[in-house]
Image (tube, rainbow, N blue to C red; front, side, top):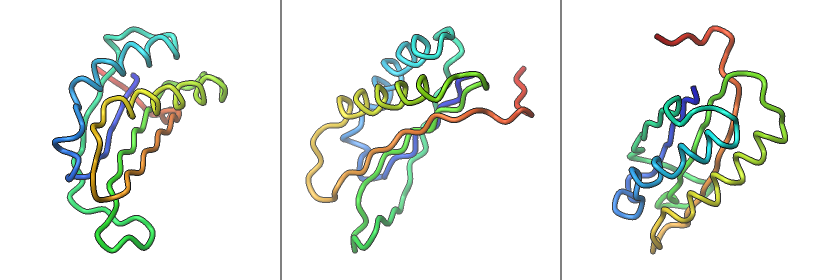
Length: 116
């Protein structure tokens, strides 16, 4: 915990410094939700095709999903998502062409979550 998944459009491969983003993300998450950096785990999923609204070529997107153990207040989660969104914009080089859509969500892990 936290379990972090980042979905990103394939056309952002060269524009998105994923390792640097994860290394900056972990201390931010750890400090905001009061956990250790060692607990943070991030995986990136490249999305080959995306369609946003009526964009014929498909706009580019990045969505960060942060799953946390229950107990964080809505205010803490909102502060976290705002901070992650700001961090994300700093790790994306300028993209020409498609419109870029960025989003972040923090949610509670299901009570069935276990780790070894």
